[in-house]
Length: 281
Figure 1 (tube, helix red, strand yellow):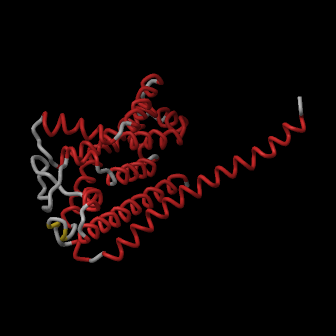
Figure 2 (tube, rainbow, N blue to C red):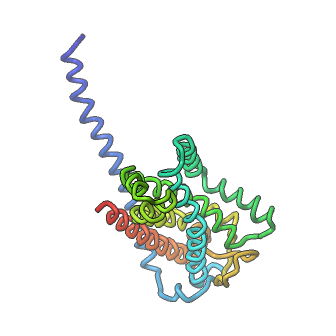
Figure 3 (cartoon, rainbow, N blue to C red):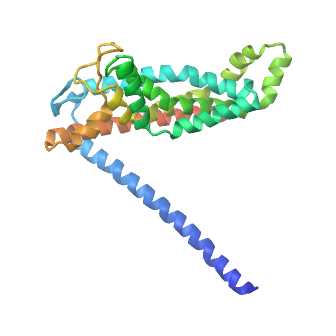
């Protein structure tokens, strides 16, 4: 064997690998900075406070209906996904046999990998057409909840896994039932991880467009609290649709919607990271 040649190849391979990694990171960060910078520059340049209390009129107006609709959808989707997601994570981490736990984790991986447009189409076929709900808040919230569910389940599972089995065994040895152990000990200790996972899932959901196009539709009206038979507005529709219009007012509204989405997602991400760090202390 030619050892000097192998040593030379190794010396060249390591810097080459590091160089490719650094270059890839720089390219990704540059693309991200370009997108965020473009949204900030154009969004702030055209931003006006009246978007908060003016509804959308055609390709102009404000974003009151879209802002309230986004928050309304996020609220209901989080409520619909949090309870089953936390319950599945608790069962998977502390109660389920290994075979069932593996099946639940595999199902979460599959569900998180399903394209959101497929979830939207299923929601359109089953909820909008099959159940006769029409475009409405509940159909959109269920579609978003399906997207959020695996993230909340995995966050709960991981949060309980960090506690280990000693905490569970100690609680059982103290006389608590399995249900009391999960609720009084496990859930309380894993609360920061559960909340951070829920906020991250909500941040992912508010940035979705495709499933809402098939389920929530679009409305220029402020949500009136109805869950069925009434379409609802949301920010991602404005950012996706209005940017293609040939009118400056529509472009300004699209960048305003993108700016508000960016701020909303950033707030949710910061809150989630803060809770995660609190749980690690």
